[in-house]
Length: 426
Image (tube, rainbow, N blue to C red; front, side, top):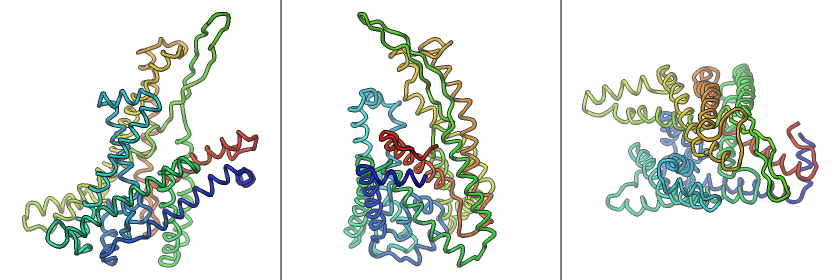
């Protein structure tokens, strides 16, 4: 692997892409440390320690929310916008038509996704700032009196920070290596690892706990790689066509149906829904109405991240969302229709609707393994939280890190193989 990395740096264009990606990540880390003025950082740290939802958002911002910088939202609004567009494509006829127009249609959908990111980022910035204002962290905030202009400036600056990060991600995708948005999230997660390790070594001195944590991390990463790369290959034959005196087609290939086609999206869906009730309840526990306070207290205690009920529901929701999102993506691909259009067929299966039903049946079977695996990965922190109080085995973070590393290695592999070098994957 080391030799393959050296070979990559020997190639001028690959070296340029790697250095460009690294330079963009350095700029991203500088942006992540530009704070919004007027924040009480001591109270902010206390809020993050008691609010899991903000901790999840901090994961995607690369730690920028702990200092409440202009990049505090990270690229999370863009991810939300992308998920919304993927779900709307099969529902809205006009968007479905665009998706079938080839590259031009995908460009239009991508443009709509970028435009949708702006209001989502502004809304999220205002919502998060409102929570901080209610906790006394942002004293000069609100749509009243002399706080209007500072509020507008804060929301605009945080929205601009998100758009700037998305733009940097697009630059990495076009001129660097890998998917830019994913690499930005990856860099944010990895950048927090040295701090977590240092706190565990200095604060806890729990060497045995760190060893067990490391072993669990390695085993989990290996399992993620195996499942992420696992696929069921459906053989496909193409009919021979005669045009004039020449014969075309007649080849054979396969359709790779992945065990985990949904990636980390079910985890994000389930986590957002599960954290929302407890987060709202935490602000209603102190209200004057005894009934509302009692219900909020029950929700906070039974649906908090320390409750077994929370993790059981989390597991079931991850499994459910895995099937839902996999079917949505599969329906958008129109595999049976495209196969029939280009003269392809699955041996022993009639083209058209029977092929669609066959592929759906196979995908449902293998998705069970991927869904249960994602569910187990999701509840892994519940079983590891007693090992260390500072080290947290984040399921979403691990999936992002492993997925980005695999994708980047594959792109480097393709670059090396095109130039007859031995790649990373033996």
